[in-house]
Length: 561
Image (cartoon, rainbow, N blue to C red; front, side):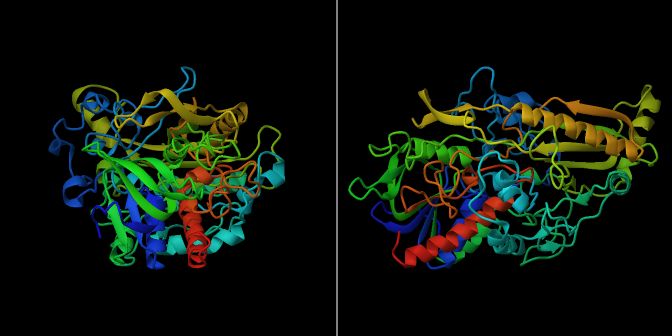
């Protein structure tokens, strides 16, 4: 059901956030018989009115040609590829939701405040981590191992993939475990040439992206019809988003209450018992302050937002942030380093983009090949390469008039590979509350202090040259290297800041995403990551949530929470 609960009602579990992990937590816990409240800071979207993937530019007011209209209220959000005139109102108003950084350490924090959060606009790539990732510190001596192994998490990867639908190709690589796949999307002609060259010349695998877009009917949802702009919603529910898949399942139980426009400011604590007792939130439209009571609180607000709430929930027992006896809350912020790569032209292929294939909403992937079996002397850990090869219109066509028109129409067959590299966890990459800045609801804003280290930059330079050599081997010409890193946060894979571990002195959570300090407090999102492997993180966030929910249900029924 969807309504506003009575302030006297006590739920079994309160979930803060309705995105990829919040939706899964609501589904798993309510289906197990618990009474759940899900709070989201934004409104619920109406697909018929709010999803715009089938609109043409001429159907929106400024034809998507006036970026200053978006930048006026969203100067940061408008830097995101997914934020444009079609959907910018899903993203936070930066003027109402400020954060600060040092002048020399910029950070791009992209946020959606609608039910479903970033699951509505993510790129949907779903790659498993392996023990190469979970036990990374044992291999190279840097940082901490995860307190969980691949073998323990594998059944939950299975559960998530089988339910949401992930298309992909099995490759048998130990560093990128295969999953439960729907049929893969096809490669283009240029990608087939690149795949062949990468294998024959370098022994590297190129595969189609493993993506939460359906390629066949699945659990009552039709396959993707390749319309293209997935960041603007999917009225057919052909890709995974929380409002399309997991939240409806939770609401169907009759045991889930969805509370919208609820900006959570604090997790409440019972000073007598030391246990959490609920949350305080501000109604975004009326500014009224409300409290909601629950026996267990699960924070799934997204890594930085979850940490912000915990920091703002400090008590006499935990003056530096709730459940922060270790002092690590807010530290070890990570995001993939990106911006390094290479691009070129495939002259051997005839390009007619106006008669090309439909807009496949996917990329190809070259899994990590550095520091897999042989240690690199240049850097720790590794990177993956993502890209595509397709027919494009040639905006650089020579000539004028009819000559230019014909050249533009004839097009070019382009190719590119872009790296996403692992960011090492560092204490001095952190967030804290800004003592002087608050948001529109009076909640302290975050100050984010983060930058990439030399290990990431060496990795990026290696990735750019590796990408270029593969393009050259495939016959590409006019190859251009990209060696300017993106701003920290631009990959939209920020994690850490409430990391899990076996040792409560250096971690915030245990392997079940449960606070070491407060047993009825859980944090189920990317903030729990002890490290950030080069694969996209959301699939692992969802698997960890399901793993944690099984534990929570068991402990709840045993009255241990």
